Image 1: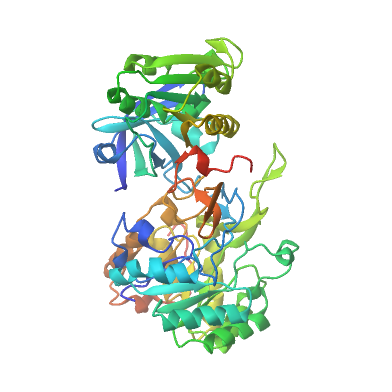
Image 2 (image 1 turned 135 degrees about the horizontal axis):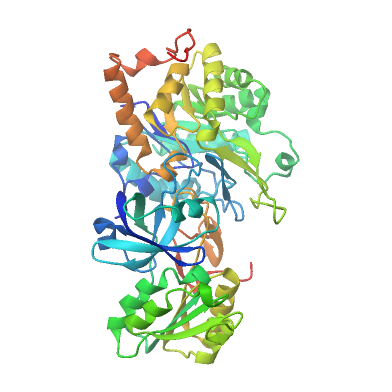
Length: 303
Length: 262
């Protein structure tokens, strides 16, 4: 990556959508919408609802499927010359392994991000409050091992914040052979219209994103960075360069801009430029110099 | 190509109770905009509300565009509080506009309530096409909520007014009004309004073998086809499922594309 900034899966389509606003080739990497073995229709509408400083979504992994990705979406990204992190989703470890293997075989990605944490897939078990894969460290280990054995591509495992201790899942991914973890996916949430008494999402439950979740994400990145030997791609409400720097200081190696792209299409390149400005302003030579560089002395106010 | 521009507000007026016309100076967007397309408007400088709001172009001028905004929630309330001279961040033009062809003998526009929003720009584009003036049905709950009636008349359209309570024009629904105009093949109907009205108009036109374009509204996060939040159910067997995106597949659809019974 020529800079430490990518985009969060599901907020950037397959890249072409936003090339109308800026040169997508400027990104450190493009992370694709989740890919599945077959095309998925996703959930019924309504799929999104705005909440204070963010939004809930229950898209349900609508995607074109890996075949259409390779046939119709990959070409644009390859022409751009931008590194590709292909996000993949499946119902079983074998699905992930097959997707990763096919991506490598077809040169369809430069890295794989395994989504073990989508909260919005139709699944009676999840609706009753059962677990996402990434809520069970044993499963994270098994899934990661299965994907690892299927590909030599750099492998990132995307984890859920809906856990008691993020370190357990993160360490399981590391043990399973992941090259890094992506933190965090959306927080589970829901919203009800008080007047009609109806849920605002057809799926009832959705994933919360946007600036409202940033403090939760920063804390999880900080927790995980203390125990991991592998890098973290951090995401969760990054809107401005200062938000991205917060994650780097907490211990992330790279960052992803997510929902803010909906508000400001070129938010990610503003973050790229802003990080460069920050490094210069503070006299750092390289972005590596600020990774995990949070001071141990709390701020005082007034200063 | 769409862009994001900080646009000075050139006009901000309440045109009916809770309804506002906001015009902005936006030469680049105005040059690219087509009737039926929309823009995403930033409603607050901070992050609450976080998302932009989609608004269709009411009029497209040489150096700017206008929007009609109905106060429905927090975002539109903030738009209503803006004033001329302030700046508004406008992202657009987005989506697909109306298909405008001179092959038709007759053009009928049907507006239900705030659904009138994209139709003045369309009427303006239809006027030069033929000798027969476009007909416009302007329907609203009552007289005070009638929008753009004078605007359509000044353009040279034939205007038919209907209100639910009979305080202006005929006491009738938009669907009853269009039935009274007896559209036949060779006519194109363009409709925008509440979903039940659109469903009724669409089904009637399909049954009459009359071409009909509908402009749909949906909650959107991005407006660019990325978030996949603004789907409606369609009849077609599309790759990946039977959903279409209001933002990039629409917001104007052929009436036959949408599954009106869902």
